[in-house]
Length: 142
Image (cartoon, rainbow, N blue to C red):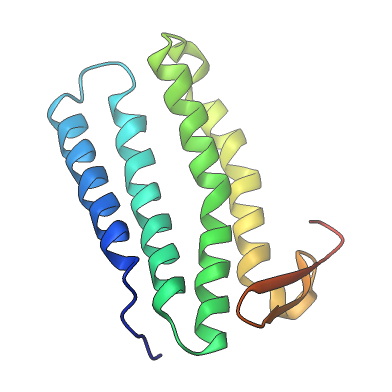
């Protein structure tokens, strides 16, 4: 995997720094409603931003597509963490039970596995090509 410097990486590093400071702040105040889901959300966002930055600086097409798939696999967990944070912060923690988390985790796990094994069955994307931008030919599920 080859990477080359891009001036946009400074923005990526600033975003990672701000998110890490927010995560640290939430960790120090983890007794506050919504702090724990917010920590999970910030960690997931840090991974997503890091993958976005690595997509920017990657040189081979295969590497850019790999980081694109990693970003796509993180989108549903980020949305779910945001939903759980919203419920917890709004005082609706009775909705955030082990049963609810289990029911939310099932589609997450299935979709992440489908994205990571897409080359075998092509259910998410039939084809991904790169010509300066990533172009998708959507599959039957997407």
